[in-house]
Image (cartoon, rainbow, N blue to C red):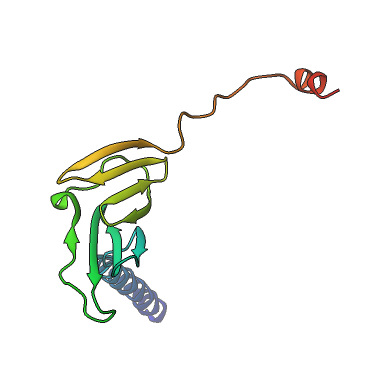
Length: 135
C-alpha cells in the first residue's frame, strides 16, 4: 500500500510537470516580438534609418538628430518585398536581397536587376583532368 501511494505521487508529479511545460512553452512562444531583418542608414541631409521587418520596408528620418518623424513610412504601400531570398540590406526606397536582386519602391516594388549576374556554371571534371591541367 505504501509503495502504491508513492508511485501515484511520482506519476501525478510528472503529469503536472508535463502539463505546466506545455502551457508555459506555448505562451512563451506567443510573446515573440518583431525582428529586424536588415537595416541601413543615410546621413546626407538628415539622419535616415531604414529597416525591414516581416519583409516590409520601413524608414524614418531625424531632422535635428533628436526629433524623429514618426510613425515610420512604409515602403511600397506595405506590400512585402518580392522574392524568397533573405534581405541583405536596405535603404530608404531600396532593398537588396541575398541573391543579388535589387528592388525599388515606386509605389509598388520595381525590379531593378541582379547585381551579381548569372550563376557560375559548375564544371564537371575528373581528378585526372584536374591533375593534367596543372602539370
